[in-house]
Image (tube, rainbow over all chains, first blue to last red):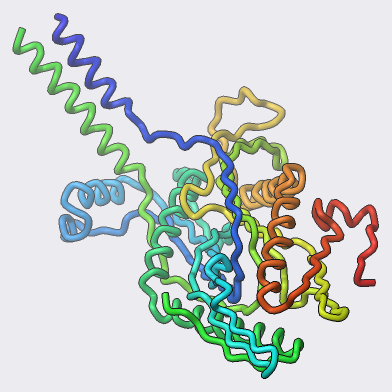
Amino acid sequence: MKQIIFIVLALATLLSCGKEEPSLYTELKDIHELSLAEVRVEKTFIIDDPDIHFRDIGARSGIFVDMVDWVKKKASVGKRIGIYSFGTYFSAYINLDELSPEDVILNKKDKTCTLTLPAIHIKEWGRDFEVKTEHERVSVYRSSLTPQEKARAKDEASRILSEEMEKNGRFRQELMNSAQDKARSYFSSLLSNWGYQSHIQFREE
Amino acid sequence: MRKKILILLIIIAIIFIGRLIYKQATTSRINTLPARIKAITQAVKLSTLDITTEEIFKDTIGIKGAVLRVKARVRISFDIEHIPTAEQGDTLFVQLPREIIDIYESTREGYQVLDVWYVWIPSDPAEITLTTDEENAIKQKIKQKIRQQMYEKDYVARARENAVRSLAQLFSKFKDHIVIHDPYPSGWEEDAQKNSPSFME
């Protein structure tokens, strides 16, 4: 009898284990960053019923998951779809803490300046709070698209977007080139106002 | 006895598998379209404070009340491309401009709707949800509250202090004498109402 009670309690504990809730907090970080170029990237996500035929079971996400999707599709009446978009913000910047006195060679006699700026980094800041509804349709007998579903879908879309941008070499190069152009233009204009001819270069990462 | 234990274990296993199936069946499938990159904008901004905050917000929208957990990221920065400067002899005078507060939703677990109810019938047992427009409207209010907090908690003051230090460090690499003036140490929106005169005028 004691053994049965122990097994039941152990399994009940296992079954009741849910996702750990994050704790509330505020984190402050003092930074010294010169942001030179920024971009907003838009992502669209679709919440929809699974679209799968019997012959596709096992060919997509595994037999078990595909079977569940197929049963769900057959058991559902009507349509339930939501298409939403949101933006995520990236910036290209230099960290001024990485700019040392040796990086600025100022010749007051010749009125020239050689400036070596730190390497440019790219940072993902965050996303829009709001989502834009591109399309939403829920038939009778179907439950509404809940905020919880949309929140999960938005998180998943954000994760996919971060991976996409990490792998998109062209995007990263364009953003960095734009930042470098701006840095050159800003510092050469600043130094020119002070009577200096400048040569601006960047350190490699 | 052994037979009873075995039957109990089989029942528990069935419940466990059933729960797994139910969870799979009720999870929506999510598809995404490729990302669309908008135009890159160039601007020289000095960022001096990066804040991540996770809080519970309670608010009303129309006849509904809602409680949300929100994770936000706030950037406080300054446009130094058009910063007011003046030279007197070998001294460079710089005035710190208005702060720019950018508030973003965190890209990981950015928000969660914890509860929704009808304000006049809080004990209504029916399941109530928010439409996308209602969610967006509440989030606009949340952004305003977060913005207000930046001043109330002196984060803007801290960012401005950091900016004065950063600018002094940066310009001192080119000029021997630098004076950085901050006309609104608590924030442009806070102190500007007191009409502090600018030294540049």
